[in-house]
Length: 207
Image (cartoon, rainbow, N blue to C red; front, side):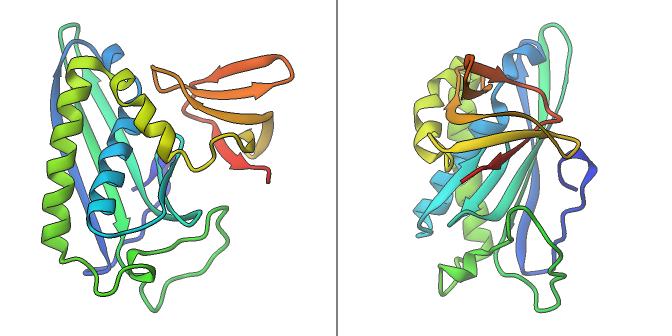
């Protein structure tokens, strides 16, 4: 499943989908920006597999040439001194022939559009797990702040006009300035740079 209860379609052999459970010290307040950190690991793994032009869209989309290649869904559970996260990742390897081409604000795409032959799925999975382990070790010690600068380089909408929607209605417009050290989206508006954290907001390009 995708964010906000949406359905994620996956066909056998045409995608790589998995969930990873990771335990952290401290409460869930220490996990701010985790979905962005996971995105960093995914970009590293895909780039190492030869995929060009991979970028990220706050907070959980994986993009290829501004089309949606995959997504990240993080669910948290915690107590005062410990917490855990289940990180679901889905990546399109190929679009199935019978794919239902309904309208999307980001068109779907797949690795097969830029990589031939495709990397073997188990090798790609192993590379993803290795990069996730490195990133999550860093995140566990130093939080998203230690990964923020790298995430900024992967931000596909850095310094571009954007709008934020809630339930289909525009609630904010401005220029995307990336994310802060807690993973909050930074949008420069007429009032200055504003932090956006709400999980029910959808980011859209205005360009």
